[in-house]
Image (cartoon, helix red, strand yellow):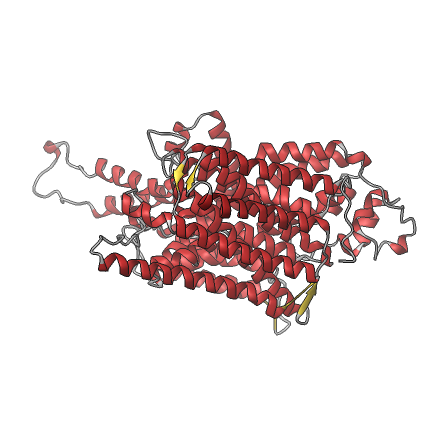
Length: 622
């Protein structure tokens, strides 16, 4: 992903000098209402970026446009390269937060709330898998200053849909031809086409209301009902025919057996989660890749081995007599403190020794780059893992997380400036409360076993992870807006390329690795159910919030880019919808995978030709 994105961005940087064609707004008084894309032709670029309302940011921490044109005014290309690297790092942070901290919390929450696998699969787990796309759309729509700004969100959601349904599914088919599941595939594509038509209608009408935005959420509810009812009917048929039912996987054990595979093949959301799990094994065939908390679970094994080594205090029998106490209480206290410190240091260590030894040089470089993200997330975001020893419980780390997690959430949401009664700062109140809670956790727990209320830490982890993802997504969107201003690229093209590729490359790696390991049907299930979920919630949630804030409706721009986006996704869906049952008889052959990739390349070429005005279509009178 990073190599592809970096090459794309550098290619754009090469033509930067000829990108600006707008008239020079020499009068500083005109800067306020000017389009931010005119900054390149302004006499004072720094003043322009500060005064133009369209250059301001509503969410996020850094105004990258101002930084580039003020702090890097004499070396703008260098500033752009710096932010390209920072943008890649943020994508990495987004993936680590979603996969290693957000999804595990959702899994535990589904068990605490006693949700069935069916409901959890199409709600919480699906939300976890689509979190980067959904929060990127929320950030893009939340920072809208005009109707054209929605193109970034639509471009990302629809562009990612084309990429996943064409390139990812095509790569899965090429890697391993297979007989796909009929009804789940047709069900997901049918709902996807309906959702796409509804989205195009909204864009074509150039206006979205609160009720129309809620319609996306209702369509998602209808999808969930169809999935649950379909599974219920199928389970009853299995019982009536005395066929063995699919075992309950609520324990979180994803070890592969035929019954679980059959279940995942019919569940696109669980399949997406499972595909990411198995894809971790693709790097090394003889071993599994350490999970997101190997360094946490290692802490327990290290401490146990240390305990075993130190559990023989009387190796020299000649030094012992009847008056010697069998257990020295003071030495045990010292040993417990030493083990607790050892566990804590291992828990916050972002790079485990085992993982470091097994990685090659590029793998070690990746671990070093990821280390700052891993460390900051570890000390702020709790992880409850029933698969790890002691459910990944660490007493002292939990105390830090109770203190630092809520404090980070307060500062990340810019609520720390709030004064209670106009006098007492809210951050001070949070600090007092969190310190007391941290002391309570320390007092009521021990180092050896997790407390009964440990699963509720998953809810804190969920909240903190959501804020982390949203904060990172805001920065990603702000940098993309910088690229749009500098390279004179439309938001729709930015969305369907850079943002869509960044959010979808993980699906490509996971699903193709899954196919190579012999489970292509699970991978293909995730290629349609995941993007469908992202489209429904990625449009429904942010536009519902935005319409409520803007008095019940929001204006949208409609252009030929959006037609290309919709047409490309529709062609990809209809290709599978028609060719799979009528031509292939649901047996996916390699030539069909190649065809799907050609569809995506043709779509991308058409989008680029439209962007550079080789193809001009005026839709203003449509």
